[in-house]
Amino acid sequence: MRLKSLLFLLAPFLVFAVSNSSAATAEKPNIIFILADDLGYGDLGCFGQTTLATPNLDRMAAEGLKFTRHYAGSTVCAPSRCVLMTGLHTGHCTVRGNGPGQLKDEDVTIAEVMREAGYATGCFGKWGIGSPPPRDDPNRQGFDEFYGYANMYHAHNFYPPFLIRNGQLERLENVTKEEWLIDGREEGGPKEGAGVAKVKKQYAPDLIVEEVLKFIDRHRDGPFFLYHALNVPHANNEGGNDKEQQDGMEVPDYGKFAAKDWPNPEKGFASMIRNIDRDVGRVLDKLKELGIAENTLVIFSSDNGPHQEGKHQMEFFDSNDSLRGMKRDLYEGGVREPTIAWWPGQIESGRTTDHLSGFQDWLPTLAEVAGLPPREGLDGVSMAGLLTGEGGHGKHDFLYWEFLERGGSRAVVTTRWKAVRLNTDKDPNGPVELYDLENDPAEEKNVADQFPEVVEALESHLAASHSEP
Image (cartoon, rainbow, N blue to C red; front, side, top):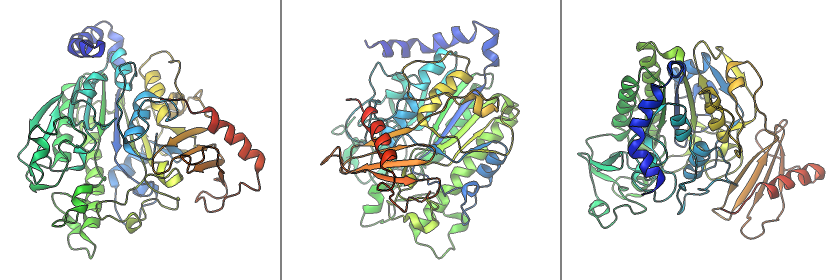
């Protein structure tokens, strides 16, 4: 039996023992990380969206800390979530693309770190790290409770025939057209549970947020670490390609958007943004109702930039704001994310920071918040002092990405400069594009020829940041 499997079986007893070993444990803050799926930098009102309203997220930003230079771990979901969970960037982490691969037993996740600190841990929504992960992969990787989609392709279906609870398939009342995907021939396969629903009765994002609220209720005495990993506003790609449906942005209803003279996929996208905002509001209201808001740190972000799938057009709502690029690009629009931290009484209201930060920073940050000593061997640095305004937080000289799909690309960013190298499959040492983000945040002008010394310095970071998986 794998060590992690044994620990999973013993986890409830270990958590009980740790949580009762010291009165100080009860003083540890609860932590909630809400991760949207394919949300653009310009999709929230507090980040410039003017067509779609996000009052709860706007309130969260007004009452907390808004990050304007926070970056996802990658430009697609699996590696980005891997960076978030492990504190290692894509030059060092295990899962570096959406292709085959899984977290290793020796990978240490945020959930395992939080469990070490005496936290109850729960993951609800889209796991999607590696393809295909075992159904119990979230539990193997440190979560006491899991409900949702283990497989990223399964998460494309908003009306799936089943969801996964702690490694076990739990049937729903929905029926997909592709029934062969769940009759055993594809059990555990790369696209298990994906497809298009022909009978739509239970909308998975709604089921998942109910489990989130139940988890908070059960663990109101804390401390708990809750990871709410949304699968919206991602598209059901299969739905967008379906000849009968031609709409991958599925929602139970369009509500006030039904009367709009918009294509159905855009009505669906708008409804998803409305629902994300609604559900964030429900979580914040639950914390206030239970009287634990002031002892709970809530973080909101997205795993990568906006998509153009399921017949949705990114430009319809100007999802990337003025930034260049989108999902699958290493330009700013593909990796810079709308990020908010909220912690009443600890984070001063109305703050904004342009601190250069990334997903790899959350593991060391949350470990410090939980009272653990610094961990070695990470690419991230703690931002705990930045959150509270007390200072003393870590700083990056640069952030690094590699995306080895679609011809391959690598990038580094500093507070001022961005270097992007494309087509690395053909020429790993090919020309570098250089952008001055201080004066050209939209990355419109390649200035590599004007600043050869900057290119040389950033090329050294590109070369030094990659290790073989």
